[in-house]
Length: 397
Ligand code: HAM
Image (tube, rainbow, N blue to C red; front, side, top):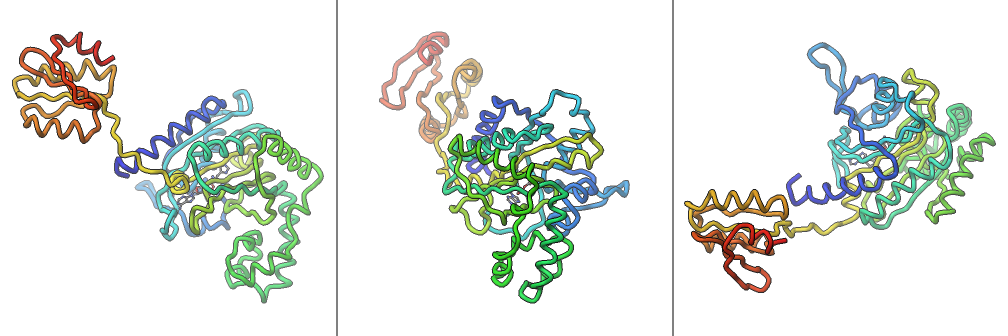
């Protein structure tokens, strides 16, 4: 990331903090790598991520480590390991950092990418579901991501999913000849992934498949109804998509995904859902949770932001004579607290230094003379002498 590209990222980081911190989310960082076991168990053995996308290696002590492909399993690990269940619930957290997946690189898909994410741990209230979705919607709007769509569904409890899975397996086995080879091979391991297939034959079969929404228990259906009602009440638009399958195994109940039609094949800007069983799976108490992660690079692509080439330098200090270097440097330190400032290289030709002042877009240029300063207004071109540094500071503020 060169400075031109990094500027938009910094902005987005600040916008994320400005949205999430006042909503009560605390910033956390987890390590870039963890025990392989954490992801294998947390994300799910049969997922693409675990089967073929993890950067896994043995360290010198013979332990198997993996560069984190996602942030939710590590946060659950940290929640249990650091006794966060003893804090007032729910615990609201947010994060930002690099993640790694060994996927074929293409537009919007990288092997190292950046996610911004939020997780709320310790509540199953539908208002929390609506809250996290609303915050992601706000962030994407603030980032000016274009042509957004929100898809929403519910996967029910793990038990419902298991029952539905069996039903779906029966259905898929019954129509196995019409399915693509890879889907057919995984009917028993992960039947839900058949909804993700781009194969036309498989898609035709999936259009008529039983949906999970029809299998929800009354409590899960009611929970989903509440979430939708809250989104409706605040005018957040969404489509209910019973075929929405997320590529991670830990989801329960609400799942959602924002896509941008401004992006190509990799249109997922951010998504998430409930994972009510994951903390318990890592040895913690029963803790219903929900969260999301969004791809920073994809948000910026979807925003198509013009790169801001304008520099933030307000004051340029030109030092025509090398003997005045100390004077220039003292002034630089004094101005720095008040204004953004850049000092030219003392002794470089005046023409060269003035050119640099222009290039960085300085509003003012201060020329350090033998007996004081010249202050040049770069807009009007007007120039006037100023005797002391104090007077100069006043003129600049
Ligand atoms: P995910 O859908 O796997 O969810 O990833 C979230 C976002 O990360 C995607 O929507 C996409 O924008 C971005 N992303 C994923 N892979 C890549 C890649 N190879 N290159 C660029 N961007 C990528 C999760 O990771 C879950 N942990 C989200 C979550 C949090 N669920 C509950 N809490």
